[in-house]
Length: 344
Image (cartoon, rainbow, N blue to C red):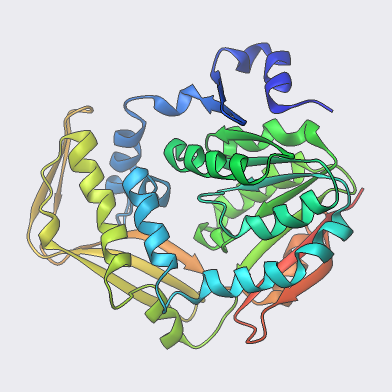
Protein backbone atom coordinates (compact mmCIF):
# COMPACT_ATOMS: atom_id res chain seq x y z
CA UNK A 1 0.00 0.00 0.00
CA UNK A 2 1.50 3.31 -1.07
CA UNK A 3 1.62 6.46 1.00
CA UNK A 4 0.58 9.79 -0.55
CA UNK A 5 4.28 10.67 -0.77
CA UNK A 6 5.12 7.49 -2.67
CA UNK A 7 2.25 8.09 -5.05
CA UNK A 8 3.46 11.62 -5.72
CA UNK A 9 6.95 10.34 -6.42
CA UNK A 10 5.51 7.99 -9.06
CA UNK A 11 3.79 10.80 -10.92
CA UNK A 12 6.37 12.87 -12.76
CA UNK A 13 3.85 15.54 -13.67
CA UNK A 14 2.85 16.21 -10.06
CA UNK A 15 6.19 15.60 -8.35
CA UNK A 16 7.48 19.10 -9.08
CA UNK A 17 4.30 20.72 -7.72
CA UNK A 18 4.30 19.22 -4.24
CA UNK A 19 6.48 19.84 -1.22
CA UNK A 20 6.96 17.05 1.33
CA UNK A 21 7.50 18.34 4.88
CA UNK A 22 8.47 15.93 7.66
CA UNK A 23 7.36 17.19 11.06
CA UNK A 24 7.50 15.74 14.56
CA UNK A 25 5.20 12.73 14.33
CA UNK A 26 3.54 13.49 10.99
CA UNK A 27 4.16 14.39 7.34
CA UNK A 28 2.62 17.17 5.25
CA UNK A 29 2.29 17.19 1.47
CA UNK A 30 1.84 20.80 0.37
CA UNK A 31 0.41 21.74 -3.01
CA UNK A 32 2.68 24.54 -4.13
CA UNK A 33 0.38 25.52 -7.00
CA UNK A 34 -2.05 26.81 -4.37
CA UNK A 35 0.35 29.67 -3.68
CA UNK A 36 -0.08 31.26 -7.13
CA UNK A 37 -0.11 35.00 -6.22
CA UNK A 38 -2.98 36.07 -8.46
CA UNK A 39 -5.38 33.16 -7.79
CA UNK A 40 -7.27 34.96 -5.01
CA UNK A 41 -7.52 38.16 -7.05
CA UNK A 42 -8.71 36.28 -10.14
CA UNK A 43 -11.41 34.50 -8.15
CA UNK A 44 -12.60 37.79 -6.63
CA UNK A 45 -12.67 39.44 -10.06
CA UNK A 46 -14.69 36.56 -11.49
CA UNK A 47 -17.20 36.78 -8.64
CA UNK A 48 -17.55 40.57 -8.85
CA UNK A 49 -18.10 40.30 -12.62
CA UNK A 50 -20.95 37.82 -12.15
CA UNK A 51 -24.62 38.76 -11.98
CA UNK A 52 -25.61 38.65 -9.21
CA UNK A 53 -22.22 39.25 -7.62
CA UNK A 54 -20.71 36.63 -5.33
CA UNK A 55 -17.46 35.49 -3.73
CA UNK A 56 -16.26 31.91 -3.51
CA UNK A 57 -16.56 30.54 0.01
CA UNK A 58 -13.17 28.77 -0.14
CA UNK A 59 -11.50 32.16 0.55
CA UNK A 60 -13.24 32.41 3.93
CA UNK A 61 -10.74 29.93 5.35
CA UNK A 62 -7.43 31.68 5.76
CA UNK A 63 -5.74 31.39 9.17
CA UNK A 64 -7.97 34.05 10.75
CA UNK A 65 -11.09 32.67 9.08
CA UNK A 66 -10.37 29.15 10.31
CA UNK A 67 -10.02 30.46 13.85
CA UNK A 68 -13.27 32.40 13.58
CA UNK A 69 -15.08 29.34 12.25
CA UNK A 70 -13.96 27.33 15.28
CA UNK A 71 -15.53 30.02 17.50
CA UNK A 72 -18.79 29.71 15.52
CA UNK A 73 -18.93 25.98 16.26
CA UNK A 74 -18.74 26.76 19.99
CA UNK A 75 -21.86 28.96 19.98
CA UNK A 76 -25.07 27.58 21.53
CA UNK A 77 -27.10 28.41 18.40
CA UNK A 78 -24.79 26.35 16.18
CA UNK A 79 -26.32 22.93 16.75
CA UNK A 80 -24.53 21.21 13.84
CA UNK A 81 -21.24 20.50 15.59
CA UNK A 82 -22.75 19.13 18.79
CA UNK A 83 -25.27 16.98 16.93
CA UNK A 84 -22.66 15.45 14.64
CA UNK A 85 -20.24 15.00 17.53
CA UNK A 86 -22.96 13.14 19.44
CA UNK A 87 -23.55 10.84 16.47
CA UNK A 88 -19.87 10.05 15.99
CA UNK A 89 -19.30 9.44 19.68
CA UNK A 90 -22.20 7.00 19.80
CA UNK A 91 -21.48 5.15 16.56
CA UNK A 92 -17.75 5.37 15.83
CA UNK A 93 -17.14 1.76 16.85
CA UNK A 94 -19.92 0.54 14.55
CA UNK A 95 -18.59 2.69 11.71
CA UNK A 96 -15.11 1.17 12.13
CA UNK A 97 -16.54 -2.35 12.27
CA UNK A 98 -18.44 -1.83 9.02
CA UNK A 99 -15.57 -0.04 7.29
CA UNK A 100 -12.99 -2.64 8.30
CA UNK A 101 -9.23 -2.18 8.20
CA UNK A 102 -9.14 0.93 6.03
CA UNK A 103 -7.15 4.15 5.84
CA UNK A 104 -9.24 7.02 7.22
CA UNK A 105 -9.13 10.05 4.89
CA UNK A 106 -10.91 13.27 5.86
CA UNK A 107 -11.71 16.14 3.52
CA UNK A 108 -11.91 19.64 4.97
CA UNK A 109 -10.57 18.29 8.24
CA UNK A 110 -10.02 21.65 9.99
CA UNK A 111 -9.19 21.05 13.66
CA UNK A 112 -10.16 17.34 13.40
CA UNK A 113 -11.93 17.69 16.76
CA UNK A 114 -14.95 15.48 15.95
CA UNK A 115 -12.69 13.05 14.11
CA UNK A 116 -11.14 11.96 17.40
CA UNK A 117 -14.15 9.71 18.02
CA UNK A 118 -13.36 7.92 14.76
CA UNK A 119 -9.64 7.82 15.51
CA UNK A 120 -10.35 6.28 18.93
CA UNK A 121 -12.29 3.51 17.20
CA UNK A 122 -9.67 3.05 14.50
CA UNK A 123 -6.72 2.84 16.89
CA UNK A 124 -8.60 0.47 19.22
CA UNK A 125 -8.69 -1.99 16.31
CA UNK A 126 -4.95 -1.77 15.67
CA UNK A 127 -2.31 0.43 13.99
CA UNK A 128 -3.99 2.85 11.59
CA UNK A 129 -3.40 5.63 9.09
CA UNK A 130 -5.13 9.01 8.99
CA UNK A 131 -4.88 11.35 5.99
CA UNK A 132 -6.50 14.76 6.58
CA UNK A 133 -6.95 17.11 3.59
CA UNK A 134 -7.45 20.85 4.11
CA UNK A 135 -6.82 24.07 2.20
CA UNK A 136 -5.47 25.84 5.32
CA UNK A 137 -1.88 24.87 6.07
CA UNK A 138 -1.91 26.52 9.49
CA UNK A 139 -5.07 24.67 10.56
CA UNK A 140 -3.74 21.36 9.25
CA UNK A 141 -0.36 21.75 10.94
CA UNK A 142 -2.00 22.54 14.28
CA UNK A 143 -4.38 19.59 14.00
CA UNK A 144 -1.71 17.10 12.89
CA UNK A 145 0.66 18.19 15.66
CA UNK A 146 -2.02 17.71 18.34
CA UNK A 147 -3.15 14.37 16.90
CA UNK A 148 0.40 13.03 16.62
CA UNK A 149 0.89 13.66 20.33
CA UNK A 150 -2.42 11.98 21.22
CA UNK A 151 -2.26 9.03 18.81
CA UNK A 152 1.30 7.72 18.50
CA UNK A 153 0.00 4.47 16.93
CA UNK A 154 -1.58 6.32 14.01
CA UNK A 155 0.45 7.22 10.94
CA UNK A 156 -0.57 10.77 10.00
CA UNK A 157 0.02 12.28 6.54
CA UNK A 158 -1.71 15.58 5.85
CA UNK A 159 -2.40 17.03 2.40
CA UNK A 160 -2.56 20.82 2.08
CA UNK A 161 -4.56 21.46 -1.06
CA UNK A 162 -7.94 22.03 -2.65
CA UNK A 163 -10.23 19.04 -3.03
CA UNK A 164 -9.67 19.01 -6.78
CA UNK A 165 -5.93 18.54 -6.31
CA UNK A 166 -5.98 16.50 -3.12
CA UNK A 167 -8.69 13.88 -3.68
CA UNK A 168 -6.98 12.11 -6.61
CA UNK A 169 -3.92 11.50 -4.40
CA UNK A 170 -5.80 9.13 -2.10
CA UNK A 171 -7.06 6.81 -4.85
CA UNK A 172 -4.28 4.29 -4.31
CA UNK A 173 -4.76 4.15 -0.53
CA UNK A 174 -7.67 1.69 -0.89
CA UNK A 175 -9.11 0.15 1.17
CA UNK A 176 -10.13 3.52 2.54
CA UNK A 177 -12.95 5.35 4.28
CA UNK A 178 -13.36 8.87 2.96
CA UNK A 179 -14.99 11.18 5.53
CA UNK A 180 -16.65 14.49 4.62
CA UNK A 181 -18.21 15.83 7.78
CA UNK A 182 -19.87 19.02 9.04
CA UNK A 183 -22.36 19.15 6.14
CA UNK A 184 -19.71 21.00 4.16
CA UNK A 185 -21.27 19.43 1.09
CA UNK A 186 -24.11 21.91 1.66
CA UNK A 187 -21.79 24.75 0.55
CA UNK A 188 -21.77 23.46 -3.03
CA UNK A 189 -23.91 24.80 -5.84
CA UNK A 190 -25.23 22.15 -8.24
CA UNK A 191 -22.25 22.28 -10.63
CA UNK A 192 -19.76 22.15 -7.76
CA UNK A 193 -21.71 19.28 -6.19
CA UNK A 194 -21.51 17.28 -9.42
CA UNK A 195 -17.79 17.97 -9.83
CA UNK A 196 -17.04 17.05 -6.24
CA UNK A 197 -19.04 13.84 -6.28
CA UNK A 198 -17.34 12.88 -9.54
CA UNK A 199 -13.99 13.23 -7.74
CA UNK A 200 -15.24 11.16 -4.79
CA UNK A 201 -16.66 8.37 -6.94
CA UNK A 202 -13.48 8.32 -9.00
CA UNK A 203 -11.15 7.90 -6.02
CA UNK A 204 -13.11 5.08 -4.32
CA UNK A 205 -12.64 1.44 -5.27
CA UNK A 206 -15.42 -1.15 -4.89
CA UNK A 207 -15.87 -1.85 -1.18
CA UNK A 208 -14.46 1.52 -0.04
CA UNK A 209 -16.69 3.74 2.10
CA UNK A 210 -17.81 7.37 2.03
CA UNK A 211 -18.82 8.82 5.41
CA UNK A 212 -20.97 11.89 4.78
CA UNK A 213 -22.37 14.36 7.32
CA UNK A 214 -25.51 16.25 6.25
CA UNK A 215 -27.60 18.90 7.95
CA UNK A 216 -31.30 18.17 7.62
CA UNK A 217 -34.24 20.41 6.70
CA UNK A 218 -35.82 21.88 9.84
CA UNK A 219 -37.51 24.94 11.34
CA UNK A 220 -36.16 28.03 9.50
CA UNK A 221 -35.94 29.99 12.76
CA UNK A 222 -33.48 27.47 14.16
CA UNK A 223 -31.46 27.52 10.97
CA UNK A 224 -31.28 31.32 10.86
CA UNK A 225 -30.17 31.51 14.50
CA UNK A 226 -27.30 29.11 13.74
CA UNK A 227 -26.03 31.34 10.93
CA UNK A 228 -26.46 34.67 12.70
CA UNK A 229 -25.40 33.97 16.28
CA UNK A 230 -26.02 36.50 19.03
CA UNK A 231 -22.32 36.88 19.81
CA UNK A 232 -21.60 37.95 16.24
CA UNK A 233 -18.98 35.33 15.32
CA UNK A 234 -20.68 34.42 12.04
CA UNK A 235 -20.70 38.10 11.10
CA UNK A 236 -16.97 38.38 11.84
CA UNK A 237 -16.35 35.22 9.83
CA UNK A 238 -18.10 36.36 6.66
CA UNK A 239 -16.69 39.90 6.83
CA UNK A 240 -13.20 38.45 7.20
CA UNK A 241 -13.12 37.66 3.48
CA UNK A 242 -13.21 41.42 2.84
CA UNK A 243 -10.59 42.04 5.51
CA UNK A 244 -8.50 39.38 3.77
CA UNK A 245 -8.90 41.27 0.49
CA UNK A 246 -7.57 44.37 2.23
CA UNK A 247 -4.62 42.45 3.68
CA UNK A 248 -3.63 40.43 0.64
CA UNK A 249 -4.90 42.36 -2.37
CA UNK A 250 -4.40 45.92 -1.15
CA UNK A 251 -8.07 46.88 -1.37
CA UNK A 252 -9.53 49.55 0.90
CA UNK A 253 -12.93 48.16 1.85
CA UNK A 254 -14.45 49.80 4.97
CA UNK A 255 -15.25 46.75 7.10
CA UNK A 256 -17.49 48.75 9.43
CA UNK A 257 -19.76 49.53 6.46
CA UNK A 258 -20.49 45.83 5.88
CA UNK A 259 -23.51 44.00 7.26
CA UNK A 260 -23.86 40.24 7.64
CA UNK A 261 -27.24 39.05 6.26
CA UNK A 262 -28.57 35.49 6.61
CA UNK A 263 -31.66 34.46 4.61
CA UNK A 264 -33.47 31.13 4.41
CA UNK A 265 -34.53 30.27 0.87
CA UNK A 266 -37.45 27.90 1.44
CA UNK A 267 -37.78 27.00 -2.24
CA UNK A 268 -34.17 25.79 -2.46
CA UNK A 269 -34.05 24.70 1.20
CA UNK A 270 -30.81 26.54 1.87
CA UNK A 271 -29.34 29.29 4.00
CA UNK A 272 -27.86 32.12 1.95
CA UNK A 273 -25.22 34.35 3.52
CA UNK A 274 -24.81 37.83 2.05
CA UNK A 275 -22.78 40.91 2.85
CA UNK A 276 -24.67 44.20 2.42
CA UNK A 277 -22.69 47.38 1.66
CA UNK A 278 -23.97 50.42 3.54
CA UNK A 279 -22.01 52.84 1.40
CA UNK A 280 -20.76 52.92 -2.17
CA UNK A 281 -17.34 51.31 -2.43
CA UNK A 282 -14.78 51.08 -5.23
CA UNK A 283 -12.81 47.83 -5.05
CA UNK A 284 -9.45 48.19 -6.77
CA UNK A 285 -7.75 44.87 -7.58
CA UNK A 286 -4.24 46.20 -8.14
CA UNK A 287 -2.69 42.79 -9.02
CA UNK A 288 -5.01 42.61 -12.05
CA UNK A 289 -5.42 46.31 -12.81
CA UNK A 290 -9.21 46.02 -12.48
CA UNK A 291 -11.77 47.90 -10.42
CA UNK A 292 -15.39 47.33 -9.41
CA UNK A 293 -17.97 49.72 -7.94
CA UNK A 294 -20.35 48.29 -5.33
CA UNK A 295 -23.48 50.35 -4.89
CA UNK A 296 -24.85 51.40 -1.51
CA UNK A 297 -27.32 48.74 -0.39
CA UNK A 298 -25.98 46.09 -2.78
CA UNK A 299 -25.55 42.58 -1.41
CA UNK A 300 -22.84 40.07 -2.34
CA UNK A 301 -23.46 36.35 -1.86
CA UNK A 302 -20.65 34.92 0.25
CA UNK A 303 -21.82 31.41 1.08
CA UNK A 304 -24.74 29.00 0.85
CA UNK A 305 -25.55 26.13 3.20
CA UNK A 306 -27.98 23.64 1.69
CA UNK A 307 -30.16 21.48 3.92
CA UNK A 308 -31.03 17.94 2.95
CA UNK A 309 -33.71 15.29 3.23
CA UNK A 310 -32.01 12.01 4.08
CA UNK A 311 -33.99 9.77 1.73
CA UNK A 312 -33.40 12.10 -1.22
CA UNK A 313 -29.68 12.29 -0.50
CA UNK A 314 -29.43 8.50 -0.36
CA UNK A 315 -31.15 8.28 -3.73
CA UNK A 316 -28.81 10.91 -5.15
CA UNK A 317 -25.71 9.11 -3.87
CA UNK A 318 -26.84 5.92 -5.60
CA UNK A 319 -26.34 7.76 -8.88
CA UNK A 320 -22.61 7.84 -8.11
CA UNK A 321 -22.41 4.14 -7.29
CA UNK A 322 -22.63 4.77 -3.54
CA UNK A 323 -25.11 2.61 -1.64
CA UNK A 324 -26.26 3.45 1.89
CA UNK A 325 -24.99 0.86 4.36
CA UNK A 326 -26.13 2.65 7.51
CA UNK A 327 -27.74 5.96 8.51
CA UNK A 328 -26.94 7.50 11.91
CA UNK A 329 -28.84 10.37 13.54
CA UNK A 330 -28.83 12.20 16.86
CA UNK A 331 -31.80 11.79 19.24
CA UNK A 332 -33.40 15.04 18.03
CA UNK A 333 -32.75 14.12 14.39
CA UNK A 334 -31.12 17.47 13.73
CA UNK A 335 -28.31 15.95 11.73
CA UNK A 336 -27.46 12.73 9.88
CA UNK A 337 -24.29 10.82 9.06
CA UNK A 338 -24.48 8.43 6.12
CA UNK A 339 -22.12 5.49 5.72
CA UNK A 340 -22.08 4.72 2.01
CA UNK A 341 -20.29 1.87 0.23
CA UNK A 342 -18.83 2.08 -3.26
CA UNK A 343 -20.34 -0.59 -5.45
CA UNK A 344 -18.53 -2.29 -8.31
